[in-house]
Picture 1 (tube, rainbow, N blue to C red):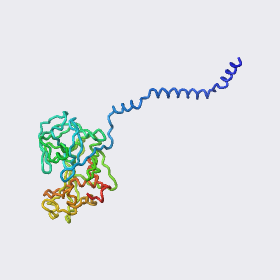
Picture 2 (cartoon, rainbow, N blue to C red):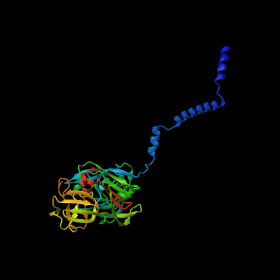
Picture 3 (cartoon, rainbow, N blue to C red):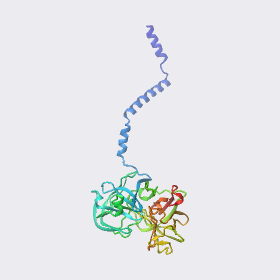
Picture 4 (spheres, rainbow, N blue to C red):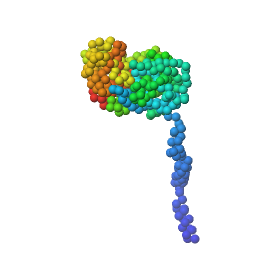
Length: 362
């Protein structure tokens, strides 16, 4: 009896007051709720599985790795794509031409013939074949980069000598314009990407020593060191409805004592670049090329963006050739010294000297 009385007295002494009782019950409820939440919450693996089922949301930009390959005495940029749901293949990345031209055997089954024929002309050679519609996917991109079915040239016969030496099976022309001498007109696959990726592209981090760079698609970035050169409007529109632009921009050249500001193609596909003998008839020359040792600069109206001596590094970049066209061509060396962005939204090429390049030497 004494023990029962002591237990009753203890229970009475520890009986919670109304306010304490509410707090006590709330604490118990929270503990129970926490156990239930923990038990019912999906595991990390479940969340990861659900996340992987959701389509990736596009960011402001995405990037594609660029590899450099030797091609004779020069360098060529190479990227990997898959066309028509086919296997990944390597193609030359060319800012001097427009449209994708690919060996017929490199296509997958997801292609549809259009009945159209084509012949695409480059500097010194042409590729002929059929026009088909097929989706293009950048298989090594940081985001899911793929076009809807678009017009692609499917060429027949053997790859060119440059393709054979670089292990490529086509030319990915990403110039802002159209393949001018080609019917039907072919456009860069980049402008067929969904927005915001179709609004511009940038080539950065290119080194003559064959280390890799990257192709960024989407918003073009500027810094305080950047130079913006206006692009010229063309008489067509891109698939997203915005106005199309030509591939040529106005850059200023000095070749020895000769000077000229002229329409210029910033061309990753050019090995040596070209100088117009029409615009610079007195430029020092040896045969059909600029004379070895001639100092050359390329830049905007106010800033030198690329300087070199013709033939000084002949083992990798020969002296620029001369031609009678009224246009210039930078060749790939321009990209050794600069990050070059093609802003198709604002209609300008944004050129930023690379801090790793010594005083714009290219």
